[in-house]
Figure: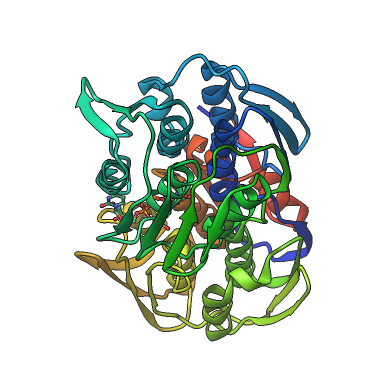
Length: 416
Ligand code: EPZ
């Protein structure tokens, strides 16, 4: 089992390039199933979930030619319409093959993702939408078995805002017969990036990025070239790390316009931030001020940045209230931060953090992707050595994070 060893107390200085966004790359790779032509993707991040998605598509018969940071996907000879449990259980985003398989091939067998550390993660809204579009769906032996002669357009209003729910149904609708309207749709930038790729492939989509998306089905899609958008959560993670550790860093290749709520919170914490084009500069000299955060769907504060800000608050001046409104169990990092000496009280979906001057290095355990990032940030500001165990969680969603942080001056290394 690999671990990270972190020596706390080092400031961050220098430049770091932001990788392609995991949560844009995963649905866009599934879009390759919608055409027999080649879909060429650039700026794919080198991380475990992307590798898992490549394997999942390849076992279906998709031909994937990868080079560094780019890959071509050709779904001309898909001969297996199934996403097996052993792949889906490690990566919930595999549910995103359901819409494309069903709308292009009329059938799909996808393992129910099951829960994960942060919550039960149901997919009932995905299924409800596909049924509204004419799919026959049976859940048996832990699999979703869906069939449809041809999906037809429908007006679908989401009870809850769901990012992959919006993405799955948008992909199902591009080849459906007629018009589909998705109401109360997710507005995340990754939804827009997927829509841009689908439009380049010949889809007719309007309103991506708003809460109402209209898709007019077409008979087939063609190949395209698409460059995956930069990762806003990786960007936010490095900025929070610098705000906690102090220093002067510049992100390059970032999408400034996707980070408004995060940049606002960092300024509230006392960071000096300058942005221009695709560069974000953050300077932090003193101890951060505690900042309250309340997670909500985009463009509000992202749940994927909650754990990182909690780490910042553990050593900030004053106390902060963190409210997690999206997932029912996304405070797994709290007990690990407490092992480092953090003063945190949790009541339901609310945590109160009393900032202390210094954390004390210890061995801690990563439980999910963003919790791992939170522990790395805390280790960077703790006294002495911190060991973060089970870092496979981290490797799922960050590209070479310890190399990037070390290049900025952090003392962090991977150990067996
Ligand atoms: C996406 O997950 C992201 N994953 C998550 O990022 C992110 O935290 C989440 O959106 C919220 O922004 C990918 O894009 C691959 P949801 P998703 O459907 O789509 C409930 C990371 O760290 N819900 O928007 O699975 C659900 O339980 C990951 O990169 C239903 O009840 O999240 C949750 O409470 C973690 N029924 C809420 O909606 C459904 O059918 C929002 O979930 C679907 C969702």
